[in-house]
Image 1 (tube, rainbow, N blue to C red):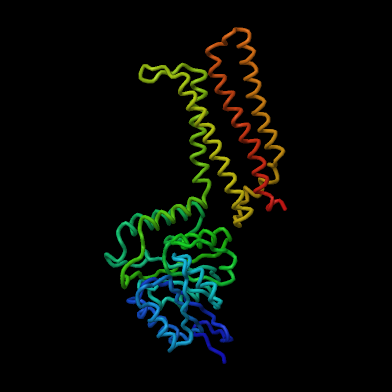
Image 2: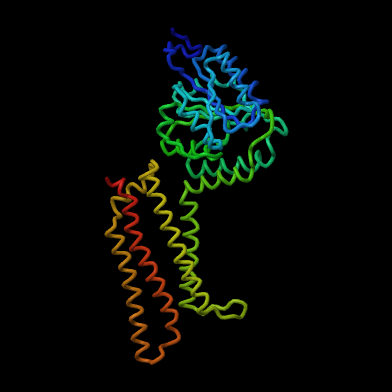
Length: 396
């Protein structure tokens, strides 16, 4: 049996569906009937070769009974259960059970118009790899979305992802999207919670997938919202930061190191007073601490970026090219050089102490500088081994 795909003009083998429609479900007994009716209507109208997969994520209402009853009437409706709770867990389970060439995802709460399905699939057939809805292009009815989501949470997180990962998506948490199965296999999604939405876009960006936005109308949900504003917002922010080590580690590292270095130089060469109090030894210790802390954070940034390149598929050309010029031997030499300078300074201080019995009070500054250099040298020496270990996969 063959099926003609309206608008696309493709003749397809219907032994497997061309389209898999995934709906995660947690206590959606009120919204499910509406969503299933809409999807079935679209499938019938456009002659889509599709399967409908509802992923129950621990519902305690009549959601399962509703789906099972509909599945008896429509063999293309499937109910699967995912015991691990979470937005991402439900989708990962549904993806594993799906068969379609194209995968369409949407919430089962009636907030989205399923008559947009043909538009999403057409965009994929025209060359897009991932199609995402944008709820903010079309006029949104008042009260449909909480104000802190509409004006704070969504814009802020979308802005971060746009700037940090160079994507042109303006609504990264839109719950309706479609993706080619072959591309979904490339990006390898893992997260189990609401951060799944961010992970998909970030990983797609790393794999240079073509992403396209489609304006969608966002409607008032049917039933009670399961979204936890602060917890889910934090999980998304945490995930974004973990995938952006330059912001998480490098920026604060540079700030701490710069403050420490500049203040140490000023305190070493100049007599500085603050509110008629001369700053001497105690601030010197804080300067040293700031330098060491900042340097360690910058090393963490390096670890993270190399790991992203060698294990997470990040195509950062700067990091990849650095392997040609930076290696373990150069790192060891740099570390030993800092250690040697610090040790020489301590030797000088020790000789001065022998000659003067007690040593000069000013040598306290030199002692702190020497100690700082020794610590930085040790950090550099052993971090060179760690950089090499993390980068083994890239070098091979």
